[in-house]
Length: 306
Figure 1 (tube, rainbow, N blue to C red):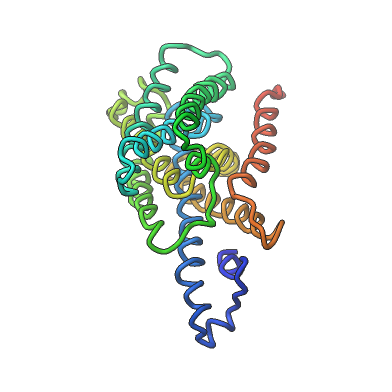
Figure 2: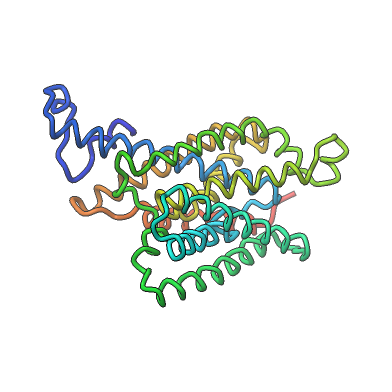
């Protein structure tokens, strides 16, 4: 699938063109197609892993960066960086987005600890409302300050603008995913509850903080470079754990692979449905993800037979 995606796009490009050494074709391949493929795979893998960690630590299958307000807080951070530090680099916007995403994520967790919900579906609904309020504030200021066009580039994930020299910061998520894998066993234990983790000698608060930092960094980096990709961090971890179980160290590599594949499929579909025009990957992922999300909710609500 990755090889096929390298030769799908507006510019006609075939493997034979590369073998002939045609300069223009090689430039398209190196400057556009290879960076785009790398960004697709990294973004899909990273957001899926972030969703998996978040679901384990909150012990709720329907919590993810897109249903807990993390993505919306990252967008607000990017808007603030654009407003007050207009000439700042992508790194500056990313750092600001990470700070806002961390603040929003910990605020959401604090809300969950203060309020006890009897229904697991209520938690993501609260997160969606929480994120909706933050997004409303962001949209208000973007509209008043004539930054709506810039805001739209962050609200919908799109890989059409990925070029060499404008995407390299996303490689940071590789380091983040390595840290996530190293802490996988601790995340699994922490997901069993604070008392259980402490009985096994695991510092529950430290592990939760590290997990939330991973989620915030991943969400902020992907949002700055690509934009928001809805439902990715929610449906992929659910589908993988339904098949392979809840051992995070075991399922984390498969979750990353499945997330990368899902985004890749969505991107290729977006490029071929209305060729030569392109549908943003965020739109395609929203349609597919919404259907799967509804199916997961219905499955969770279905009474289990004894």
